[in-house]
Image (cartoon, rainbow, N blue to C red; front, side):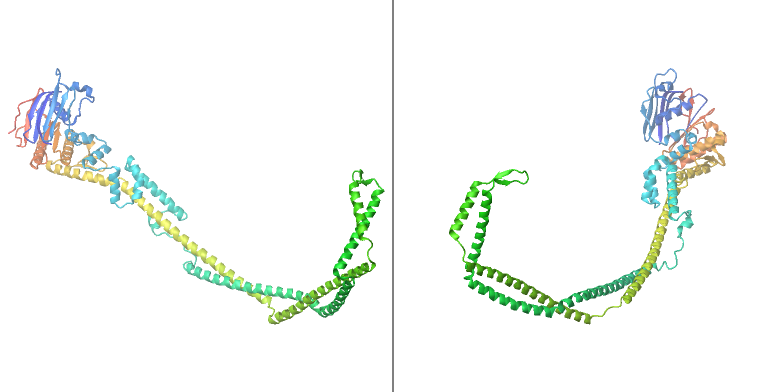
Length: 610
């Protein structure tokens, strides 16, 4: 920022000033109360909008010179015009964040450590925002998922995010301890941790398990075959037992075969005789139709006799008695009359039956009854004969079956089954044993894998915690902020022959070997001046304002002016404004400097030092 003109009127102790800045370094001198500080504060007010002596805008009227009703300060530069008007306070100020530290050289030293750090970060264009830190973590190769878990904590600062990463590392250690059965995590210990050695043969367990399963399948098949053989033998034995029981019954039936044949022959002969007798009887009775008619007439005659007897009973009685109630029901005369009529009509039509017909019909019935009995006997005989012959045939088949098969030795079969059961159980036990070993080995490998994952988790979180710790990314960012300014301070120290000023990582400021707070007034002035110049250089504003120049002795003043002159020769500064209480303007100033005398609030005619 190259200032070309400063104009002021009625601003505190400055009544009138209109200064053209033709050279880089401008020295404003005067006695106490002349208005030097007023001019400097007015410039500061115009450039930044900040006031030194009042804090409220409503009090801006008190900044007017006594008796004045209005005033202003205007600063023209290569970057534009900046001004403030009183008492309204209206104006246009610069928005450069580093500008206040150039207009007030002591400002940086007055900041707290956190404020100093924040200012330096901003000066160097560094950001501690979540996105910036996230990018730095990603550039270091950290897992994005883990980084995402700590990002919300960065809103509360690096310390909170670091604490979160440490807590997650602690949780991962606890998980590792749980998986390993109570072991305490250690970096070297966890790197190659394995549980206690497995029992002997565990390494071969998978192969042995496969073999045992195959043998078990074979044993199951052999056992099934043996059990089937035993079952078949039992079934055959049971069948033979049933056949023996059946043989007794068949032999009993077959043993009656001759008797049945003899009886059947006799019954068939008798049946033939009786068939002939029936035929003869039918012929004697006039044939089958006549016999049937005789039989039917006999039935009707019997019915007529019964009806006549019933009519006799009815004619000699009143009625019938109901058994349940004892009531007497009289005979139905209409029904009795019809019965009398039918009996009378039958007797009139039928008359008496011939004696020969009745005798022939009676014999025929007896013959037919005898014949029917013999028919039944013949049928039964033939059935019994068929059963006896079938029994005889079955006995022949049983004899053939008995001759074709030998009884098996059940003891041998049972022993064979038992041996195969024992073999099966032995292989089953081997399968269980090798299965357990295989599963134990698998569990161990799973434990080793889980432990390794938790160990990796611990290391990752510890690395993230380290990255978020003061010595990590904050330290890196701080170094990025401090290295340039400390290098500039070193150069200023060498150029001015003053003690070196250093800003440390904890934001302490030292000059030589002493902390800033223990410096003398002149030492503090030198330190503030060099810090302000470093900010001016690094910010690119190339502006420097130094007050209380008179705190230095003559040698110190000469050193300061030589330093400023060296900055102009190196083209590292555009404008330097120096204010001091002097008895008179110094002489012998270099060509890069211009001096102004202030008296009674008025900047006098510029007097250049030849």
